[in-house]
Length: 196
Image (cartoon, rainbow, N blue to C red; front, top):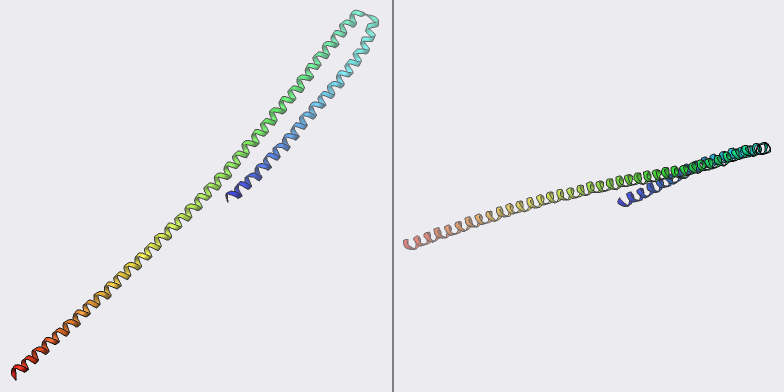
């Protein structure tokens, strides 16, 4: 019975862990796909901005060198800020994915432990109840057997005592009768002899 419980526990544990791994993979794929999509859109926007800026810069360069310098500075600043934002987004996505994965794995392990503990406890309690029932039945059988044997011994003793007592009484009566008869016979014979 304990072997069956352990086999069942193993099957349940494998199922739970497999489900957790598949769920984690799906969630991670979704998060990574979202991050990649965001990066692609951001890159497109940045590329468009850079192309537009280059056209504007070319026009402005022909008109005024100072204005071109200002616009170039703005473009460089925008690129640095955009790069920082993209890097922060990717880092946030990775950290979020790690936290979600850790939570799912932890929940799976705790659930598996609880289920396993419940199954083992149930097996131990059932075994204890069955063992107690068997021991109680054995004790009851022993008591009944002892009672029967004791009754048989007492009955045998009583019957034996009765038989022995009857034999003794009968022997006494017979012996008394024989002795009495002998005495009477002797008396008669003696009287006859004396009379003669």
